[in-house]
Amino acid sequence: MTQRVRFDFDRTFATRPVLLAPMEDVSDAVFRRVCRARGADVCVTEFVNADGLVTQQADARRKIALPEGDSPTAIQIYGSNQEKLTEAARIAEEALPAYLDINCGCWVPKIARGGAGAGWLRDPDAMVAMARKLVASVALPVTVKTRIGWGDEATMPIVELAQRLEGVGVRALTIHCRTAKKGYGGDADWIWAAQAQAAVTIPVIVNGDIRSASDAKRALDTTGCAGVMIGRRAIEHPWIFREVRARLDQQGQLAPPTLDERFALCREQLLAMNADRGTRRAVRAMRRSYPHYLQRVPGASDLVRELNHVDTLAGVLETLERGHAECAALAAPSSPSSPSARHEAFAPRTPAAPADTN
Ligand SMILES: Cc1cc2nc3c(=O)[nH]c(=O)nc-3n(C[C@H](O)[C@H](O)[C@H](O)COP(=O)(O)O)c2cc1C
Image 1 (cartoon, helix red, strand yellow):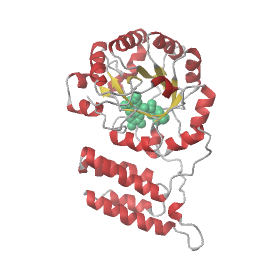
Image 2 (cartoon, helix red, strand yellow):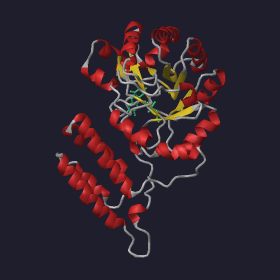
Image 3 (cartoon, rainbow, N blue to C red):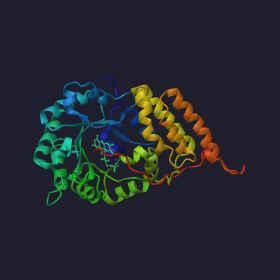
Image 4 (tube, rainbow, N blue to C red):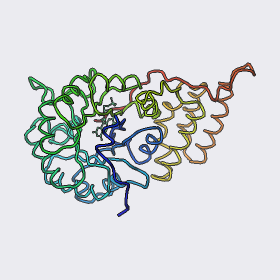
């Protein structure tokens, strides 16, 4: 077992951490590295199926493998069966994550209908009993990520639930401030995170619709929560972590990433993914990211279209290099006395959200 630097849970959560959200098929080792390099204080793996871990499925095993330097990262597990979750937690613990997180918030019908994810919100007693069992079964801190309620309750259960989860030893709670029934509809209502944080002494992490440094600051200031978690906006703009960190640490407003930084990220993530998961997957998966990373870069829309048809690693790298030079030339100011546009920032417009699965 590789030794990792011991994670100081209390200390980290006392510093208003900015967390990368667990996102299926997104928050893998490569994306965690990308976000950590850009300021994410803590990362959480995509959810890992408890049955898959218990039956030693390769995919589940891959998801909990934390490479060197992937720290602090929490492993998130999900399932509907208390015994299986407990067994999976013990297996996940061996991968030496910073802590273990239980998914009690996934609203997707195929998950929640069977009682996993947000399905636990339909039976808060069972959820608390399950959390108690997990906490007692592992040495690592256990946290829960959930929503404010299922959606048809007269009063949202989250505040009382937060107290009960604290009572059984859960060390922190992340609240995606919507009901399960809402999916991604409407706005996240951070007031519930505020109420939960006021009712417990464990850290509450506010989550939902944090899309900028200002949002993050407002979420923390208005809720009194211990930290913020960012999901969809990180997919589009992984630089959000350093922007939030700077704002929280009162370093003012950071300039948006430059054209050079945007192209550098395309290359960095492509190469890391290629090393991690192979060329075919890397080349295809990166096509989701180029439109976001190169947003508003002059000339990039043609380049993004072109990249959709290049299938080899060498071909993509060459196309990116040529595109970088062409975009930089287009962005360059006509006056030689002006500073090079390569180092100017490209502020993002509000982009379309990706497909939401949790
Ligand atoms: C593509 C995608 C995959 C997700 N997968 C997970 C997951 O595996 N576990 C989880 O707890 N939440 C998952 N979520 C939910 C996010 O962690 C987060 O709670 C939600 O997106 C709200 O935060 P945001 O407004 O910052 O995106 C996922 C969200 C997206 C968009």
